[in-house]
Length: 369
Image (cartoon, rainbow, N blue to C red; front, side, top):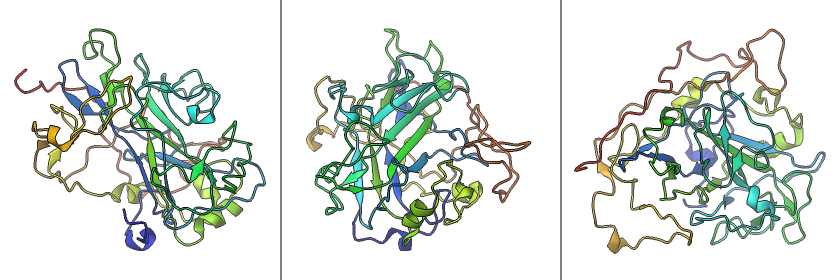
């Protein structure tokens, strides 16, 4: 993406709760590998306390103030960064380095949020959980919050930023990265519930999930961010909205929109291939599984001729149905609940009850198997 592009002016809508946020947030997609060798994309579902309304996939994005009363500097136009190493296939990070906790996965059991802060709880792992998670799996992703103050990007999309030493919260930035940015944190909830069937999992007892770049370990989880807030809206919000409750309507500096409008803002598929909704023979693109423990490597184009790496199909015309999560996403009363938005705080445009739910994992055999 051209860094000179003015994203707020180019965008016609946003799938974020705040109208002013036209940023780009990206993560690799999770797939389930059936024991017969075929793959199907794992749906995403609305996170806890993200209502009113059910989000159509997507993610939850937080802009934290990691140190109370600290003046933060908002990201600048053209700023971008990445966290996580897509080529990693083993836990080679120093456990004393805070970066070792920046990208983790949480195994949800039932309706529980878990027992601790993301990256620190017993439910969190650097790689894919080894057992079935009855409430799904959540990605926990902390982006670096310390900037060199000069470069909006770097060749590896990482060297211009850093985590503070020792902790995500309460730690000052080092002198080499003196500008303290908002702490950008993302969560993605993967609805793995349809695949909690021992008959679908590998016979050897290993776990069956993979990331779309050919990572069957989970160690390669990573995420990208491209700044795109309108004008000085993010700076104003970070200066004024310091309550820390995470409820969008409690930030008067920004404009909230209803979930129907958020869900209607989608980018339709432009490549005629099957990537979700049914089992496919291989991961989309030229992304064969690389198990490690050595780092993954780029696949030469000469080795990508054994088609099909993608499965051709007409362009989809309708989105997949909404997934109904097992938990509530807002507080219906009476009174209020801390950290939980009221269900009547943002009236929806419609009263339609989302369908879909967590249906059974239908098996499509591998062609020729």
